[in-house]
Image (cartoon, rainbow, N blue to C red):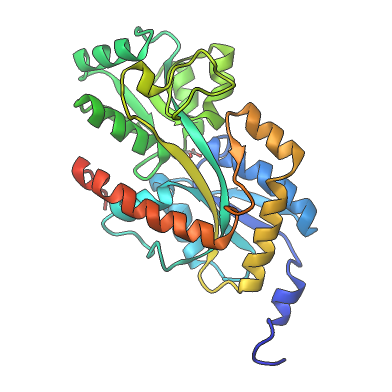
Length: 312
Ligand code: MLT
């Protein structure tokens, strides 16, 4: 084997089951996106791509697990914007965000929705803002821990209205949604990949979407900007990562497979039903994900520092 040729293992990759760690509970938004993409990648790679849910600490536990895994292409991580925000939110992360991973590519960017339990009193976003300000000692906000998308959006909401509320952390917004449906918690800001079916079924109340424009699937649901929070916009981008040291031949193979999955008719259709769309071929590349992560760490750092909320 010449010094410049790929190791044999990289040339024959993949030879066995690949595990993608989802750093949140099963049944939630990251899990939903990952399972759709993994199923399609399985067909292209000729090996099973299975999902393992390792929830906790806003996704940083699962990310830490992957940072420690063998860099052989058989353990991957699908983590969203939390990969960027947790780099600032946590004072003592178990891994160095920018140096612990190799990049495969961007997967999707998902809008969020501000929602409440079905019988929550306010009927529109302005009413919600008035209500939570007047009842700040009793209103509860669900999230998936510090570093979660729901945490970021909740933090933005509380800052925008200048009111701190009681937050209730879960290992993912899958279980948080169960409690919202059961009425154990009042409000949540969560991705459309988790809220669409409930909003359409009328089992929860929706006040706004966080996208710059209204969504095709909810033509009557206003944007947060329209409904009373000007400039309140956030999109939850997701990326696929491998542990640092994974051979470039392997990450390139995975990238090609990801690009193919993102053009799969079934994936496109299911994403559309859930209010989102796959990333472009140019974005589903190691370089695009690396650039996104770097720019997003820089973008959110001052926002988080201004909010002054940290975890250890
Ligand atoms: C999940 O998959 O549970 C979510 O992405 C949690 C979140 O970040 O809000």
